[in-house]
Image: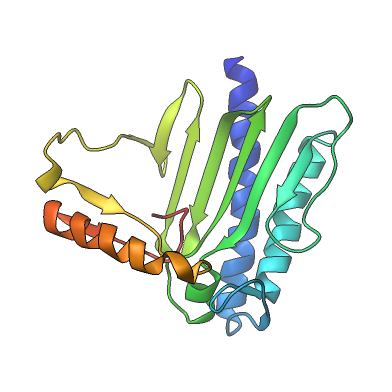
Length: 198
């Protein structure tokens, strides 16, 4: 099982790297173009999202041709072989709004599930020079170095990561009440604009 998980992790890492390479090349040539608003104000899709998705899916399809892929952007799904329970989940450019504004907090994220259980994942944030990986039974790493969550047990020393409900505006008042409580009780709250980095 370990060897299989390592192989899946290698695929996730290569796939995320391929997508992040698209981000880097687009940044060097002036950034991406706004293509559409998906569902809400500030929920954008760019030409870079689409190209990065194609790159990420290409790696997965070449290494695991029978596996199903669920990708974020339009037309991003690919059915797998019937009976094969592997599902790859791809966000080719998490933090599109950041990317389109030249902000470095964006990443490509790729994960694989089998029978409803997550096995391996990779997040490549090339603009930050960081790659995070995790695999069942193998732990988590940042740039190849093992990582873990803080051992603090005191809420006043917690540093929280969050996202904001930018699609569901009706939730904002309730969210702000919770945020107020968190800010008063913890060491701080961070929101990068890219859930994979949060």
